[in-house]
Length: 288
Image (cartoon, rainbow, N blue to C red):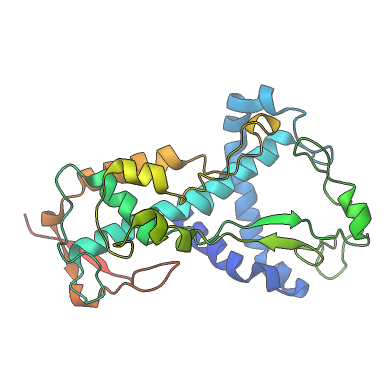
């Protein structure tokens, strides 16, 4: 429960983080300290499992490759898969109870033995990850030029971080640049998941399809962002938690017993646009 609360704060912060003026950074100190606490808590496990492989494998400017990897893993748990799985479990459960006109699946029942396919359908229609941003030109380092910044990019997917300058007296942090001078592309995953060229004439309908159809056509886990011939696959950007996400969600739907719960005001469970896709709702246990 404590982590979920922290997760909500980080997600909310991420929405406004890039445009937040520097003088306001001090108000995020408690969030940063809590994040650091989780990194320190996870780090021994990452060291134990991957330490021998990680040491010396990251950018020379990094103080600790293990800490850098731990932070990346925590990012995944906090933001990427950590938010995506609950998002589509929520839409899946909402579909089973909603009597609102926006419910795309009036049957409101999971076909027998099709829990995994049913969850796949939620991933396709209610994409928990809307886009897949990547830089094709990195932002210019503070107090540097685009040419000097480009020299920090090394071969085989490696790059050096910008050199740290003096700390700002107001914020307590060194100056940095998150986007100026950079060029970013964002493939629209949510739109691609509804491409009629791949899904056919009923692309917009909530039809539970064969598992093979989802495996062959999905881009919801950025399956297309893989090329193991480059840097031995170290630059693959597909979701490393795909199998785990599907396992968790299938197990949840198999264990969830619709008949043991009822929705408070099912007529108000409405489906909207992403990234949340469904309005908030409450379930309560039925008397035994």
